[in-house]
Image (cartoon, helix red, strand yellow):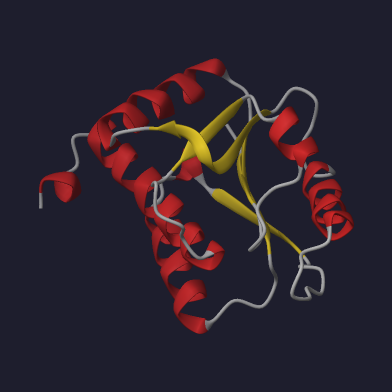
Length: 155
């Protein structure tokens, strides 16, 4: 299974890159993550629907027809860590590549949300989109540790 993290934004602070790389490094060979970044469009005070749509098209270009796409969205399904571990097992058994879409500060386009096979909410809180990269990777790593009886989850 290929795992792609598709994210809006190309210039992340060092702490974001460092945290993301740390969890990527911990992932097992069968769950290596490919990060695909698309440029964030210039924003004014009022986000342009055209900018959001352009970002969405750039994300969708990286998703194949047979891929299982997950949109990170505040109105998505909330999962406990244990439920995510079970979901990760299902994704691996399914044999499809997994694409996780993280929008920019203004969220994902309607086309991205329509394409998504699943919408996943990390929290009811509004989270900065750079931090979502780290949270997603940590939770995927934690889910893998649960499935592998690794002590990380219990520490």
